[in-house]
Length: 372
Image (cartoon, rainbow, N blue to C red; front, side):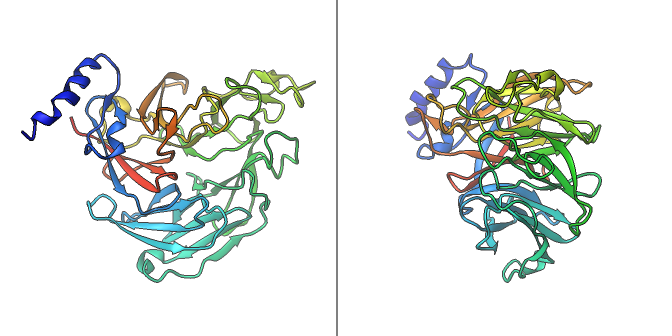
C-alpha cells in the first residue's frame, strides 16, 4: 500500500517524460517536491533556519557562512552537509550584510558603506567577536546598496557599488561600478564601470577572467531590457549603464549621443527582469563531466513584470573562447501558479561537489546533487 498511493504521481511523471526537466525527490507535503531538475539530479533542504539568506562562502574547515538582507544578520552553518547542520548567528544589527568572503582565518562581510571583518571566527561561533571595520567610506544609499563580495585570484577583495536609482548618471568613480581593495582596505581601485547593480560574480577557473551578472533597469516594459552576464578580461571596461542596456538598447533619457557601440556588450542576455543575482562556475566533480566550468545563476525573480519570470537556477555553457553557446533552465519550481514560495539568491559549489542554493524568501539553504 505504501507504493500504491504514489501511482497517480508516477503516472503523471510518465506523461511528462518527454519534457527536459523532471520533478525532484521530496516528501509529498514539501513544496520542494515541485522543483524540476534534469534527470539524475536531486534537491534537498539543508536548513530553513537562515532568515533572508543571501551570499554564501565556505571556510577551509567546511563551515558555511551566509549573509542576509533585511534580517541584518550573518550566519555560520556548522557541518552543513552532515544531515544535522547547526546554525549560529555570528553578527547582528548590520545593514544589508548580503556579502560574505573568507580569507586567512577571518570572515569579511559587507554592510552598505562598510566592510567588516570577524577574526578567528571558526573558534568563536558560539561567542563571536566584535567586528573590526576594514573600510567605511563606500556610499551609504541603501538603494542597490547590498553588496556581494568575494576575494579574487589577485588577493584583492572585490566590492560592487550599485547605482543609487533605477536609472541615473552619477560619478562613475563612485557609483555603478565594481571596485577592489587589499584585505586591509587600502589601494581601492575601480575595475569596471557602467554596471548598474551586480549581486554576483566569479572568476573563470581556467582564464582567471572576472565574470558578473548585472540587473537591467526597470520601467521600459515587460520584455526589455534583459539582465546581463558579462565578462571583464581586463580592468577599465565600461558596460553601458546608464546610456546603453544589454549592449543594444539605447536608454531613452541618457542614451542620446552615446551609441551602444562604444560600450562592452554582454556575453549573454538573460531574461528580462529575472533579477539575476549569485553566479558560480561549477568546479566540482560530483556532477557529470559536461557541467564542468559551466555557469550557474540564481534568478531571484521579477517584482514589477505583469507576468512573473525567474525564480529559478539557469545554466550557461561556454565554449573554449568564452562564448555562451547554450543557456537553459537547470532548476525551477519556486514559482507556483504565478506566486513564489521561494526566491533563489545565491549559488555555491560545496566541497563535495554538490551545488548549494540560498533562498531569502523561505530562509533556507538547499543542496542539489547528482544521484541517478
